[in-house]
Image (cartoon, rainbow, N blue to C red; front, side, top):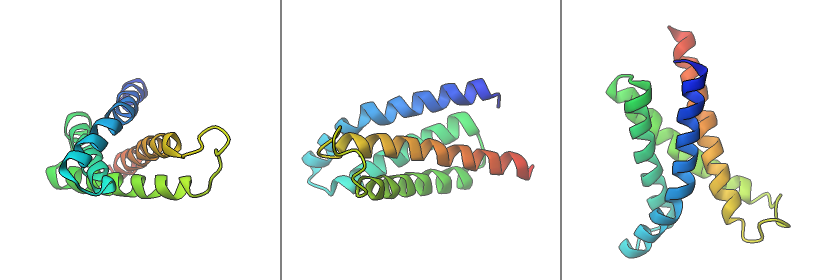
Length: 120
């Protein structure tokens, strides 16, 4: 896959994460579930769509990578917000968590892609 196409797909995925976060949180409130579970499942769903449409690997690898990346990115985003690095700009650390989750997810997708390409 060409780098320009990957950058475009990562940009779309980044903005999809940013836009959908509030929607997923409202779904979690209506279903009365833990917001982290709702966000994790929602992001795993977006990762699945990305994996099947963009990467086109086998089904099991797509599912495993999508769920693992969603869970790991959400976990690291929460750990990153616990560092309190941007309290001056984001006192409640909500925007920091959303941006960190999206960026971690994109970084992990690129790592998985590079491992897969180099393995061939």
